[in-house]
Length: 85
Image 1 (tube, rainbow, N blue to C red):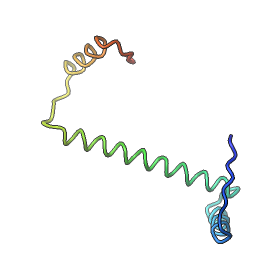
Image 2: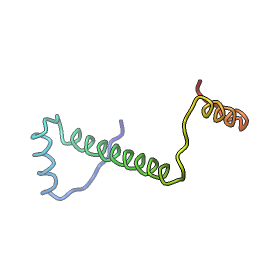
Image 3: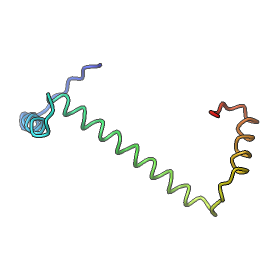
């Protein structure tokens, strides 16, 4: 694991300490790491929502059938892209 040193005002350091105790973390470092992980997750969810909305906005709906997937797999194979079976 990598160590990262961050300079913070005393008021923020005290707030982080208090929050880490309140939320049951073993250390301020664990608390800050959980905040960063939560933000990372939130941004990933937002990106997924954007991609879903882009798909919705992309045009007329397409019925997804077994034949549809067979055609997509054929296109992937023709491009030489690896795919999981």
